[in-house]
Image 1: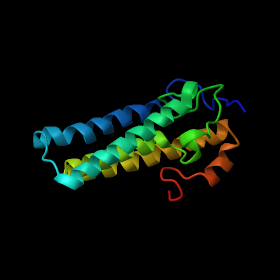
Image 2 (image 1 turned 135 degrees about the horizontal axis):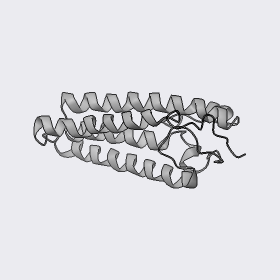
Image 3 (image 1 turned 135 degrees about the vertical axis):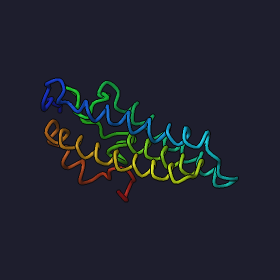
Image 4 (image 1 turned 30 degrees about the vertical axis):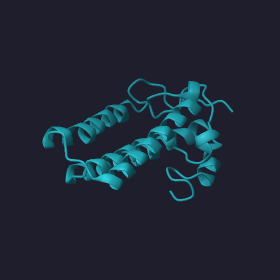
Length: 161
């Protein structure tokens, strides 16, 4: 089923979410390095676990981008004429790109532990959850079948959340 754009007016397609997301990323992934001058690093196994989480998150986000194909847009409002993607990584979670970014925040907090990076990881997770929730309102309006998909598929973590 092809989707319809709910509100195609410029400025009302979720642009401010994208601007806010860029600001959050700059603060979360940049500010701790500026404040701490490069940050310390966790040791051995913990650091390896952080890198593994970063790879998993990056892979999940990349698979989400690939699966979206021509449906990809930086805006949370679905692309006009797009279709609902429920295959590949989207058969496991509804928002793999956001989940991958959240995992990157967690990885940073593990690799370069500090109060700032832990708060940053929390901020990325909260922002991703809020943006995904707003996006879902538009997805339901554009794709009525999204409601059923949402009931069957977890938001970020398969079988959990």
